[in-house]
Image (cartoon, rainbow, N blue to C red; front, top):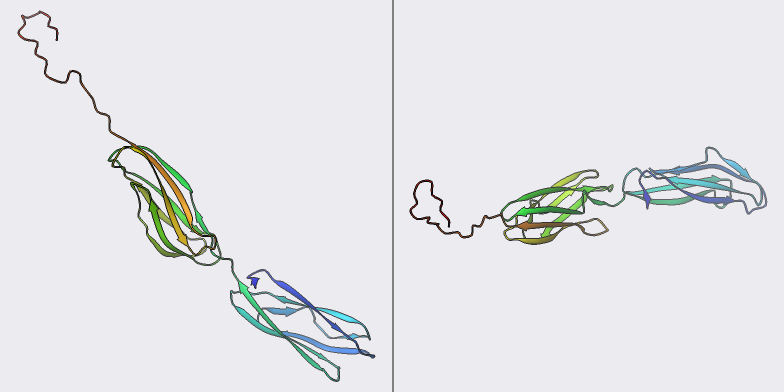
Amino acid sequence: GVHVGDPADWTFTISNIGGGNLTVESVVTEGDGFTDNMDEGFVLESGASQEIMVTFSPDAPEEYVGSVTIISDDEDQGEVVIDLVGFGFLNAPVITLSAEAYDFGELFVGDTGEWSFEIGNNGETDLNVGDITVDGMYFSIDEEGGFSLEPGEVAEVVVTFAPEDAGEFEGTITVSSDDPNGDAMVAVTGTAVWYPMIALDPDDVVDFGELYVNDLGEA
């Protein structure tokens, strides 16, 4: 196949293997996407040859059919037809992620942190996003996948970190698609700590007893 927008050339040679001059009256290329470099006929002396260049320029991702017809004064093959077949293609979808990792930092247990990233399509055909999954305790996402992105289009995914216990946590978000390179992943991490709590020692009631005014008491 030939990439849409990038013409490809093919060259063939017409030769005169006879004894006299060969008059080529015309070389005509037909079919959408096909052209040649010949504007008029020519004469070939015995043993001479002429190169003909055919250019294939697809403008859509589809199959093209054409032909080159050579008219000459050859008594046996006055008309020679060469069949042409070509296929135009666009590059496959290419998934992009606005980030490959994120650290939520330190949160208190019971608090919630949010962060978002974008899934994009840097290819030339639609990107079909399959499942979007998250693996890791206390991490969640707001998007399950199952959508398509046109070339240049993006979609946002919101990631939430809501720890219910103290510790260091990590997770992986996996985005499956029809990108030939396979799944794309985002690594997420976060730390949770307990809220600060004041402690008194002793923590019971202190009774100073009965004191006269202006006297000092000690616990």
